[in-house]
Length: 161
Picture 1 (cartoon, rainbow, N blue to C red):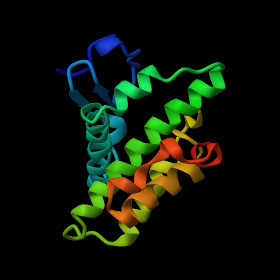
Picture 2 (cartoon, rainbow, N blue to C red):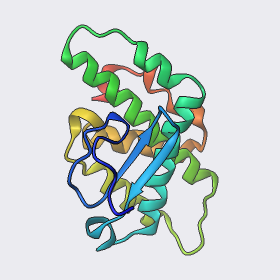
Picture 3 (tube, helix red, strand yellow):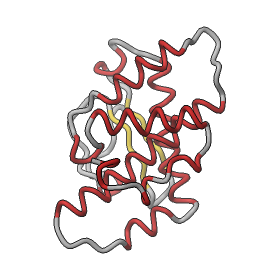
Picture 4 (spheres, rainbow, N blue to C red):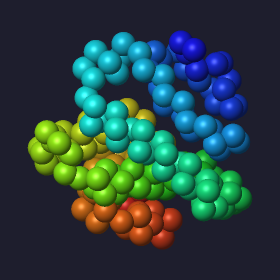
């Protein structure tokens, strides 16, 4: 398959040549690796991306996804905050996994810091959080190497902005 099927798992799949999705309905992870990601392929970044996608699966397995789906919200801003809590938790869990297998042959902390910078430089702060927030949760997960450090749900709103 060259592209993620249109409307895969009810997602509004874009025309981007590189994307990653997790479908809670069937527990599948799809990575579409195209020119955008492969032109400057960083295997540590791709490794972390796969780990954070798997973290969505973990959230699904342990009931976090179901609880998230049931959360009430009054305004769009509240919904967006809940979306960020889930996304930031996934990033933190992915970073905790990377830490659990660290050190990686041929990799240094400078390499990890570069990946953190890449992930913090996202264009969709509404969904994924501001750069400083993303950086905070990635560093927290990596430093602890423990999924218990990734409780975005009880963090203050400022920590998931």
